[in-house]
Amino acid sequence: MTEINTRKLALQILQKLEKKENHLNQVVDEYFTKSPITSEKKKSVFSLVIGVLRHKKLLDYILEKRFHGNYGKSQYFVRNLLRIGLYQLKMEKKPAYAIINEIVKIAKRKDKNAAGLIHAVLQKTTDSDIFQEIETDKKLSPTQKLALKNLHPEWLINRWLKRFSDDEVLALCDWNNTPAAVTIRFNFLRHSWIEFESILKNAGAEFARSKTNPVFVRLKNTSKLPLKQWIIEGWCSVQDEAAGWICHLVDPQPNEKIADLCAAP
Image (cartoon, rainbow, N blue to C red):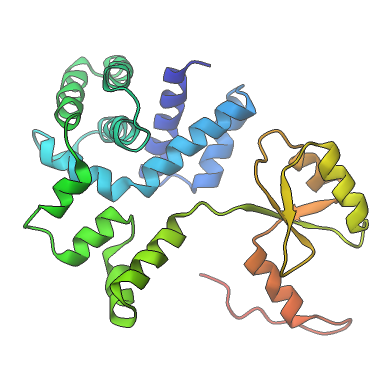
């Protein structure tokens, strides 16, 4: 699969998400199932989709200022191709000529007029320092600038600023923006830690056992691991370490009835 196909697949996923047809994991699973691509390519597509979604407000702020017409009412594929292009230009630091050329090629297959618009908008971003642009924008409040630059909603920044210092808010943003490690909970009813450790080592896994909850293992890279097979065979399950602490703290006993009163709607 070529790089342009990676962008096309990311575009299809982003469009479906923007139309609110389904949740991220469901949309990604659907496209990955019907597209015969390698694990590495799946990782590239997913990384691009997640990157665009996380930076969406920032990308839209920059693009809207350069868009001729009503950016919010432009076609889904136009907005999402612009987001993909700008994300790869500014966040992934890829060469402008290559990115713009490939994005325009995709656009031409859909609408030649739109391709010209996309080319013009992306071209206007090539020499800009987007973070400096935010900092010098007099129309933005200090909270809005902080929210845009740190990829957090303004309401949350406002709430934090009432409780914490500026440095503490920045530290919280940095922590939130750090990708979470993949954690698995090994099934100690099925095997011992020594047995599971041997399975991990034989698979070439880079891992570290949790220091706070010993049934959890943090994996550095899962793309080449037979994780699905391990789950099907009951060796482990994928679970966030914090969520796993609930079971540990509740310590359910035989014949007890546990009521979960914290479920989201």
